Image (tube, rainbow, N blue to C red; front, side, top):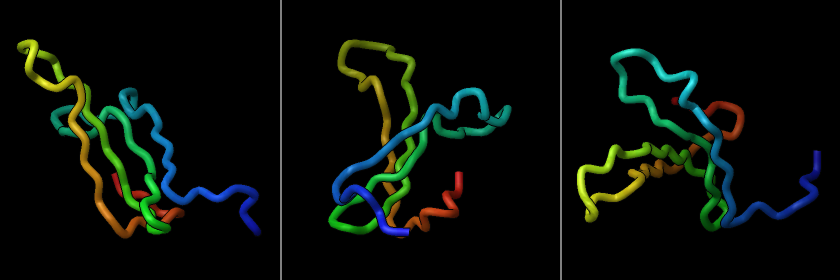
Length: 72
């Protein structure tokens, strides 16, 4: 099936908060990010801010993700 849009350098992220496993550090959000034509897995955690200088989010990006199999 031919893609209707060029997704190069674009991504999508979905809410994973209701699927988090107890006692695990699963991401709050996860999805796919395309950089230069190569898909990557993106994970995002919402931080409980302890101070003004702490980031609101933490992000992880991993290369070589297959679109039909996104490991969490």
